[in-house]
Length: 206
Image 1 (cartoon, rainbow, N blue to C red):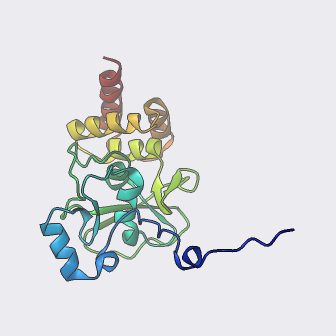
Image 2 (cartoon, rainbow, N blue to C red; image 1 turned 135 degrees about the vertical axis):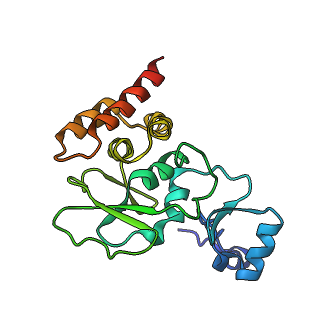
């Protein structure tokens, strides 16, 4: 077999470094460089200290990574927080960044320890969480249909309808969400939740 030489240039030329999905100050040389890039409009923040390059197409996985450090072990992002991850909408609106004053909503399974209380964080027990969780860029988030159930139960009607319609566009089955809702025990605001799901379905078909 003939010997095949490798050029010195090929040995010294490293492979391209993969571009991270989200950018933090550590990626750009520290807080000063981060501030300069933000001021120049080169970065669009998704959360304080987490951004994407200006002009980048922001997807669910980017938004999930922006909140990754908020998720304790054996928990998932849920309700309005999961809805923002899936759709980019929060409270019926579409902010580029996670709203500063919005609480992080978490889901945890019955039989596991509730996350420690902390300002700006809400945790709810969600039966069947393991099967209703998807990982986006490694971050656990409730699936769109489960998220629709939780949004219908917790959001104001008008905002809920807008978010539910958007979740349907991300794969949520709103009829299945209604059936899951009826399987829950002691649901607070059950009629209002069904009204939101019905209104969302009517908006999709009307």
